[in-house]
Image (cartoon, rainbow, N blue to C red; front, side):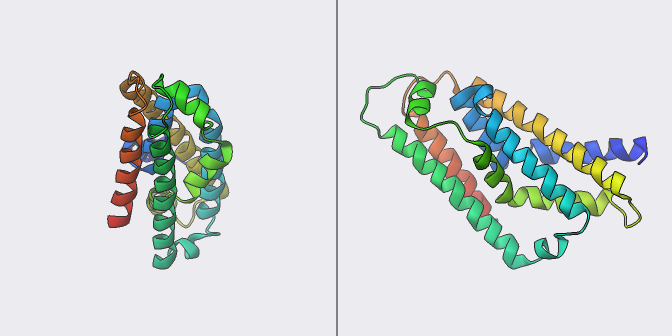
Length: 202
C-alpha cells in the first residue's frame, strides 16, 4: 500500500471518527464522570471488537450480512435501546435522595465505570461504525488488495478511533467535570436520550 493511499485513508477517516456519534458521546460523558483512567477497560473492549470485526468485514466474511437492511435496522434499534438504558441509570442517580456531593464520586459509588464488555457491546451495536467500515473498504480496498493491505487499513482505522475517543473523553471531562451537583446526571441522561432518538429517526 502506497504512502499516498495511507494519507488519503487518514484524511478520509478523520472527520468520520471525530464527528458526534454513539461512541464519541459514550466516551465523552463517561470520561467526564470517571476520568480517562476509568474508561480504559471500555476503551479496550470497544477497540478489540473494532479490530476483529473490521478485519472480518475486510476479508468479506460478514459483508453479505451487513448488506441486509433488516440487520442494519435491528442494529440501530438495539444501539438506541442500549443508550436509553444508560440514560435510565443516569436518571436514577439524579433522583437519588442522598445529599448532593461531587458528581464523579457519587456516580462511582452508585455504579461502576463501564466495563470491557460494555465497550465491546457498544461497538457491536453501533451502526455508525459499520457504515464507516463499509464506506472505508469500498473506497480503499480494491478487489486486488492482499491480506496485508486489509490488516493495515484495519489497524489505521482502529488506532484513529482510539485517538478520537480519548480526545472526546478528555473534552467531556473539561466541559462537564466542574459540575458539582447530582443534577448533572440529568444532563447526561438527556444527552444519551438525544443520541438514541437521533439514531432511530435517521
